[in-house]
Image 1 (cartoon, rainbow, N blue to C red):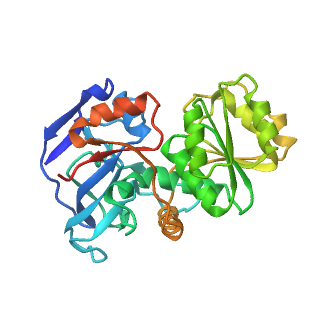
Image 2: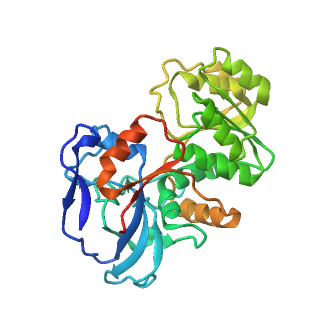
Amino acid sequence: MKAIVLREIGGPNQLKYEEVAIPSPKQGEVLVRLKYASLNRRDLWITYGMYPGMKLPSILGADGAGEIVAVGEQVTEHEVGNAVVINPGLNWGDHPAYNGPNFHILGMPTDGTYAEYVTVPAENVFPKPEYLSWEQAAALPLAGVTAYRALMTRGNLQEGETVLIPGIGSGVALFALQMAVAKGAKVYVTSSSDEKIAKAKELGAAGGVNYRSENWVKEMKKLIGGADVIIDGVGGESFNHMLNLANPAGRIVNFGATSGPIKELVLPRIFFKHLDIKGSTMGSPQDFQEMLQFFNEHQIAPYIDKCYPLEAAAEAQLYIEKGQNFGKVTLKIDK
């Protein structure tokens, strides 16, 4: 089969389009012939060696959708021919509230979805939502479950609340926007791009502010008053601004730190406002199942920015490295 293999770090240009053996499903596994995969920033960081547990060579890719073409021993819940979407979170563990020590994500060290075929545990495949195309289904898993857990499980979003999502444009941020709107929340966003803010409004955002504006925090405060829930994947210096923009007893859920560490955390802004600061990573199998149910119920479709052929995976990663994408970037595999 054809696959994209990373044998040494050094950035996306180290990705190689190679012929490798089709894997065989072991006991409890299924073999999926992939139709589409999609990219996440995790894939990009791995090419630079900026991810724990590095093990090379590896086939990257966490997200994918396709058809089951073989099942291993003791697999009874799935059949050859089933259309499935893959939950990329492997070995979550026994506690729904947090992942166990053996938890890891498909696509390094376990070979992933930048390939024509992939083997995964049977418990990690779910029926593809019928209303979604193959490409849309492949775009959903990692970012979708991350957004769902942050917004619903950890953020406990309620209808009518005000939500703030900084850095709109990433897959997680857009899924959080779409789900919050479907839940009946009033959603506001930030971005360095007025174009991205305008697109977010088309998807249901009530408004947004360009954070390159000198007084953007004051503008946002005037616009929203305060946020009940903030879904933050940015971190960095702007995190203290999130403390200012949160309502008393508000919830700030952090799932990432694309702007790096917080240099100075002003604790009085947390305890005087009775804020809840919560961390969130990926999601449990229950979160994934509930996320699919929520998408089905509200007929939410992932926003696709651009599609590349599998052999152009390096070009696709370089594109998302620029940070100009709005929505998911996918790889077409099945020709």
